[in-house]
Structures are given as structure tokens and as C-alpha cells.
Length: 480
Image 1: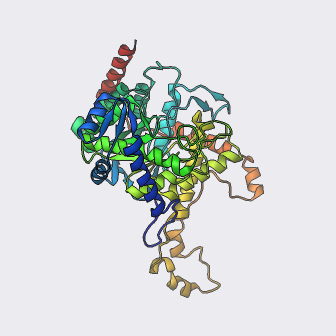
Image 2: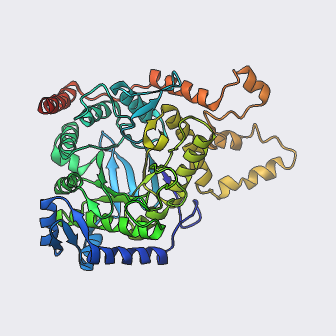
């Protein structure tokens, strides 16, 4: 976990928008909700909203301001996620920032061959193992969409693999409502029951919503279901400025934010107090030169996160991604900058570490490199402890200008505290050459292989494994 914006300058500070800009976008969103409305493609959701005071005209739903104000007053400021053993792992709120992978890449850049290929379920397992092992990765996502399982229910297989190969929190994605239900069922088995999972949730669902002004049925059904169960949810409408919303950042963000507020209202009508995270990316102009949904664009950086901070709600952000197809200078630039901006803006749950090529490709090497960069960023943005021990005035007086600090007990006590990279080569040329003259790409591939060969995740009991497998088999029979 990396925390920023400490009150006593114990950490880094940055914000893309101030209170005045956020207030204007909020008021614009309220006007959109009242005058324009949102197309809500689920009858139950429309009825819940109508019962709460909304005006419903066919699919179109319009919300008065008081419904939004009331919902924001009951939405928690923090989302707490646990590990598989019931210990607090993530307190997502304020300026606490956690990082994890992404889901469902259609291709993998194989770290062994250097070639792009279609992923298999074994790649999901290796990605899960790697994320479970790396110390700067806080939560796990499936990384790849495996081609060697039934494509109608691939997410059930992903969930089984993740539950078996990590104790860290899981963010899961499902293409349909039934997959969300199946994933929750599996988690409840691991937790020891529905109430146990509700009390200490170690997984949450990333709900993909069509856009700010269009709420698709599956997203609404997931929102209602998770809220009914009292489980945390990530409600994420995304806009493409110039395509389905105004090309200007403010107009794109205002219309996207209207959809975010509708999700908050719906969840709180179902169950006041259920935790909801809001988007921390998009909300800016689309790449109208390529018409590709790029993952790292300058203009959107920090805009939706600023709105999340304005509402004091958990933010589901994006970082550690690149639109490059290979591990080149663009890759290094974009993964570093996107991690840094997500951190400084204060996004709380930052996903898609390791994504490439507009989310169409994933790389275990990039995940490993991001882990190293995050270690650097943690050190570079952490507060500086200034006290008698760290000022070391007595040591300075003892040794003076010509003393040998290397062998002093104070040095021996503190020398392991600075950040030392495992992948960046800091040696002289001669040492680098003697050790094989390797690139960071090669060293990352070696680290991935070493980790996969040595890391043993904490296993589930055989009884729980069988119960989870039974759900997957049930889903496979339904899909047949």
C-alpha cells in the first residue's frame, strides 16, 4: 500500500482538479440526471429507482438532486478488503493506493519465447502465482482470457484458478450476471458461508457499465445482487470523449459522472451503506486519430480520480499499462507515468498492471517490472522521518568530518531501509558485462521464471477445492 497527501508533508501531493472544478462538474451531472436522464436497461432497476423518487419514462430514468444527496450520505468512504484468511489487506479510501493486475487480455507476450500468442488457463495460473508472490502487488485479477476452456463460462474457470493460487484480495470480472453469482458462491464456500464472506470480503466485482448515460442490464443486475448481499462493488461507467460524449474533458466527465451517481443511488436504495468504488480513468477525449481505446492518454489523467476525491469515495484506478506492443521505450515511459499519476492523484484500487496494446495483450514481464517500479515509487513518495535517531547528531559528533560511517552501528542498523532494485542494473559497465550484459527485459523474464519455480501459494483444503470444482462443473453443464 502506498499513501499520498499526508497532512504533515510526509508524502507526495498532487491533484488534477480543485474543489471549484469538481463542484461545477458535480452540478452539471445533477442537471444531466434531471433534464436528460439515463437509459436504464433493467426493469427491476427502474422500479427500484422509481420507488425511490425517480421519474421513469420507458427506459429513460431521471433523478432529482435529493436522491443523489441522500445516496452520497450513506455510501461508505472506505472499502475494506481482506485476504483469504480473513486479515485486513486493503483499506481503500482516502489516499491509500493499492496495485494489482488486470483481466481478460486476448493475447499474451510470452516471456519465454518473446512471441505474442493466445493465452491458456495455465497462463491465468502463472499470472496469479506471480501476483501472489510479488510484494508490491496488492490484489489479483485474472490477466488473460484463456482459449482452452468454454468461452461462454471462461470466467468461472478463471475464478477457480485465482481462488486456488492466491491469498490476496481478488477483483473479478464476469461477462454475464450468472457468472457474478457463481463467483460469489465460490467465495462463500472459501469463506465458510455467505455471512462470513459478507463480514470479511476478499473479492469484489468490477462492473462494466456501457457508458455514463447508458446502463446495461447485466451491470444493473450485478449492482442490485451485490448490494442485496451487502458486498462491495466497483461500479464503472466509462465514456469516450468525442464518440459517446462531448470531446471536451469537462463535458465527457460530467456525463460519465452522471452514470456513476446513478449507480451509487441504485446501490444505496437497495442497501444503504454498501461500499461502492467509482472510476479513476477515462472521462476525457478518445484517441480520435486512431479510434483505438488507448489505456494511457494524457488528458484524462487524474480527472475522474479528482471527482472520487471530491465525493470522498474509493476510486478504482488504472496504472502500469502501456499501449506499446513490445517492451520498448514507450512501454517503460507509459507504465511508469501511469503508475505515478495514479499514485499521486490518490486512486485507491489501481488495476491493469501488466496490460499492453490497448488492453489486448498482457505480459508477466511487465508485471514484474511494475513491481520494481512500485518499490521505487514507494520510496520516492514516502515521508521523510525526521527525529533524533534519523538526524544522528551524536553519530556526526562522534565521527566528525573524517570518520568511517560504513562500520558504525548506526549504519548497520539502518542500511537496509533504502530501496534497492532487483531488476535495474546499477553496476559499472565491466560488472554488467561480466554478468551477461543483460537487458531489463531479460532480467524480468528470469525473475518471472525464478518466481514461478519457487513460489508455493497457500492451498485451499481438498474439501473446498472439490466444492468449487463442483460449481464450475455445474456451470459447464448449464452452458452445454
